[in-house]
Image (tube, rainbow over all chains, first blue to last red; front, side, top):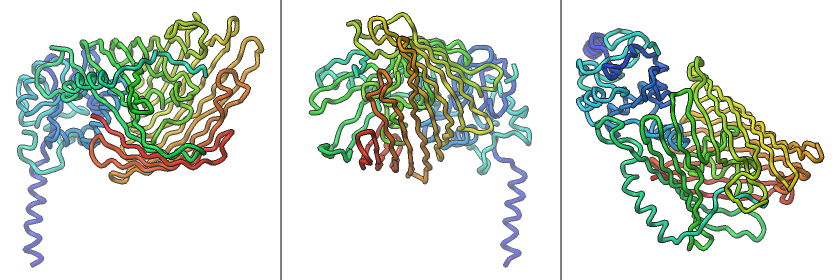
Length: 163
Length: 366
């Protein structure tokens, strides 16, 4: 009995090793000269502590809509906060006067790609396998989504998590 | 990346309750789409307005003789901000307060700022702002939702509530991140009219002398200790106290805070110095607080020790009195944007020895 029970667990473990968790690709407008961000820089951008690119353009942070799991996951991965705590943080910063307009909310991955394509200062995210040639994928800590040490990976199962 | 004559700086006016309702009705459609934009049009195509209202309903039993326990409406802070374009934004905070009989409403324009944002290193603002003295005043404004406790520390009380500080100013300010510090070091520099302490003339809202108040502050937020911040500020002003009398006013503040969604630790200390030029003597006064809270799910117990030491001989603020307060309380957030706070306060002043007060407050944002 013990052997039979252990076999599926072993298979599951092997499967989890073979298929890495889905990666989150950070995307910007194709004309953005930035190629790489450190994880700290990325976090500061999504927390709206940094609001302009080094070349002077205003940063527009784009998230998926409230209530969508892709929003909560991205906020947790990048900012280390729950969605509710993040919303409070943004409103607090807005009330302080250090933020005018909070992050944009976008309904789908396709709309995210369209928005980033059309907004030169935008920064957003999609699942790595959804990136197309209309946008630029940034390196994070020097790595792209295919690299083993890439820091933005969803901890849950594979699949179309960021559809 | 690679690549007493308490000032009233803004004139209060009474408006009919109906007018206040009309303002809210006008704002309501804007508030519905506030904060995040639920469309995928590129930014900059049209000005966007973010509107929020912060309100509270209170019950208090101060424990003072001849002061019955009572319900009361708190302030309703209407907050608006708009990015006029990529560089320029405007912020306004209007506070509505009900009269004692709840039949009339008074309005205060608490903040009005036009800001030009060159980059993260330089933001220039003009208008009425909360002075960057210490931490609390620039972090927490009139909407009490974000404050863990009920009420501000005594040292940071608003001017029209018996406060000793120039909490509001009209003037210019610059703030931003100091370059090459990895976003860790921030500065604020302010030039304003200063607090209006006496009614020497009828030009309310204008400076009473040519000397401008100045405030300089620096704060450090180390990247490796997220939520931690230490800082200091120095404020100076020449206050006209009579026809030929000037009082030199210096306010030095230092603070250390650690704030995360789970833990809050805050400590601030301020020294308020007043030196009338005619006598040359300096009167030093001190104030500050220590506050701690910890979230356990939706519950957040908290404690604050609050102290204000005022030298009775100090010009302008000597009659405000010293105080010492212990505050024990708990905050409960049943859902998003609603909070319920209940606290016990033990207050000692120069005239009251250990008054026990209870205070309950319901706060909300919409």
